[in-house]
Amino acid sequence: MGISASEIREHMNVVGSDGGHIGTVDRIEGDRIKLTKSDPAAQGKHHYIEMSQIDSVKDGEVCLSQKAEEAKSRFN
Image 1 (tube, one colour):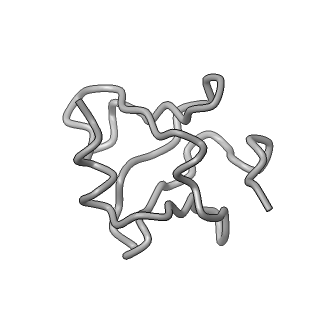
Image 2: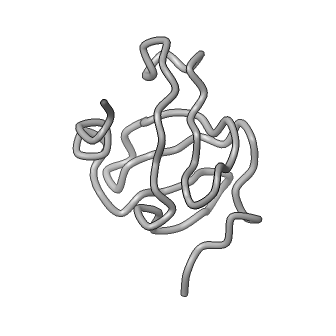
Image 3: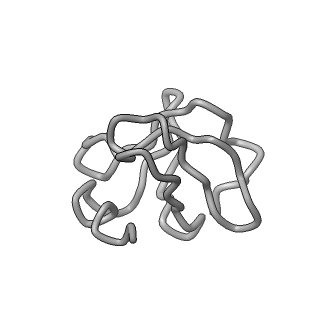
């Protein structure tokens, strides 16, 4: 069962499988989530999360299938 982009809303928190904060949803762009650059975790830059990295959307949060630090390590 895949996650539909329609389940993801602007300003939702994005967290890792360990519950660690990764960022805040800005918008969906194709098959990626663009994170806001104003989130403290973003360090002033837009970052992107592939839709394939999402495990679930629950309790108003986008939950990834990997830990927060692993997901952040993919940022450029």
